[in-house]
Image (cartoon, rainbow, N blue to C red; front, side):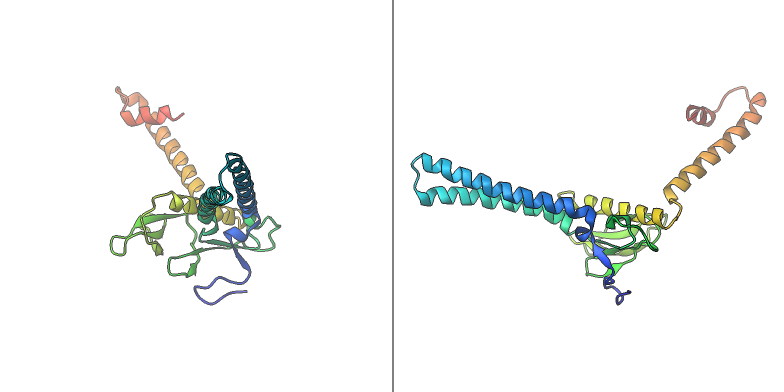
Length: 218
């Protein structure tokens, strides 16, 4: 079922809701559980050193708070991934019954179709942060993607997941991979160039650097 323009259709799920993201949720829960256990052990150890119950509880509580803060900050990187897929996408770990779809959330909250190409980001000199663009020769802009400078690698992790989702979408939909197609064309063109130069080899006394380059590729 299609949603309104810019809204996420009801049959799509954000990345953190997909089956492939469930290990991240379990890992967060386990880490939080261990944090409580460590805090409890620390409290008992401090009490053995004749600290008052209040001081021991304060130190243990501070340790617990710091640990949980770090855990949740790391988890937020994944839970905030601005990516959604429909039920036919491989991220849903179910058999596809139709076309796989991918949507990406922009900074203003709109969910957009990323299009047929991989994505990348470019700095936005006017607004700051980064724009999301299709990775083609003319870099068509999809929209403003991040408002701040990426200092902790969040942007690269988001892009890696988004581009992986796009590649899997195309695989399910039997869409040729443009990167692989380009490599095949490059290989084919190189072969034509080699054959053309080799046919004239008897007329050339000194081998050109380009011929040496393509021979080195064999």
